[in-house]
Image (cartoon, rainbow, N blue to C red; front, side, top):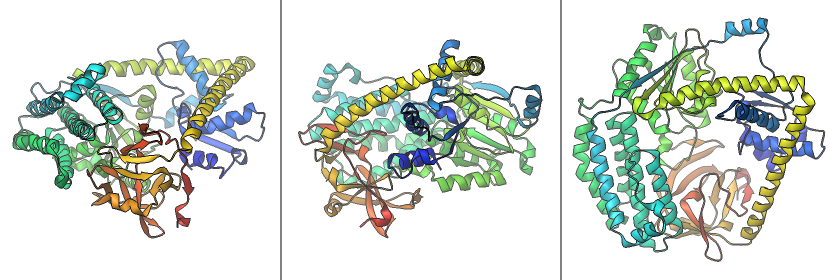
Length: 592
């Protein structure tokens, strides 16, 4: 059972924690913040503080007893102690006796490590052309008097020059939030949001071009252009202008992406590393490897690159990503749980010598023959470093970090190495304190638990107060782009704890359907058949799903709508935010 399923069962009173005798938490370092592990343990800690004895035993396992980065030894010890408080841990058990360490060494393979740097492109004509388009779109925004007025009131809206980087995405997000919440003129809001959407795609293409190939970056834009074509009949002047900008550059971008004189030096270094790591023995099936990439888009692009590279195609790569939003085009590179299981089975059997994966493969993936792990052009934190290295299971393992020297990732990795040692020392220190001064440590843990409980109760009361006010309202859902009415909150049912279905029959007149690029079955037996889009502006609203008693029902994603209260107050739901109104919980098997 996953932690998410268990917390849902506990919160919906389907099961009680007191009915569980032993709770095993694998990768228990995740027990922090809003993680499902910590939400489960918050229920446990509340039971403890109220004096309830019928609590399960807790058994946590991890290779990295850390809550993240710590700048000092004291901070590392405090982080470890807080994690112990979250888990209500009274004992930290590690392998430390000489006999056990010797036995562990027989089964644990510590990989050789290497950081490999390469310079980025000295000349990048593809990026130059993309930035010209982006400047033209930014100019269109700046030539709008209302936008300039917004910039005067909000300096953070000043256009960013960090094209292709995270800072630019932050500017776009802020611009979108302002357009969503402040701009009341529908035409102006649509213009700003349309420009921001195009800029976001161009920024993503710059990122892909910097890390993979120009042809992959162009393919990303072509996919976006193809999606836009479906909406052509609803193009306004802004849409027509933005599409024309791309079409005018299309041939030049194609010419650049096909030019063999425009290679990516970092990608060439990755090719050399993979060829070195996978000796001819790999052809006999004696080696397996994992290539970690930063994003889902990277995994698909790197897989295509390997398949199209003569010296690497023998690796027969697969890719492994997490589950996600079934309505977006990137669902083509998102996987259901059954697809993940099938991919890992083929990897173990040797049908794939290499898998390209996102961070989902950092934890819990156990392939005995895996002895090559490569992280490409990104680093994470101490826990990510330890977990990634831990995927090396076989003898003679190697762990490479291949990076663009201009990104300064070597320094970050070296800090992670230092942090790893600090974390191990902190674990030993707290372990020793638990052994030598158990009462004092338990008293400290109890105080941390009481503080956490108090903070959670304050937050719960605050949210309950806001929820009570909003539940009384009939909340209206309106299209995020064109402000068209979609449905009311009391028209929505929550199916199987996760899917939001609109049951108002008139809702079908407000959306149109589009063939889904990759129909598939999601967890819970929901079969995606089509995408649903706004009938007025064709912006994405959700999906059409089957298998609810053999009916097709519209599943919406609230993040694509405005929520408008009875007093006209508007807000937008982002991922992970609570809606602020109560949805009726319905199991699809008894759905009328």
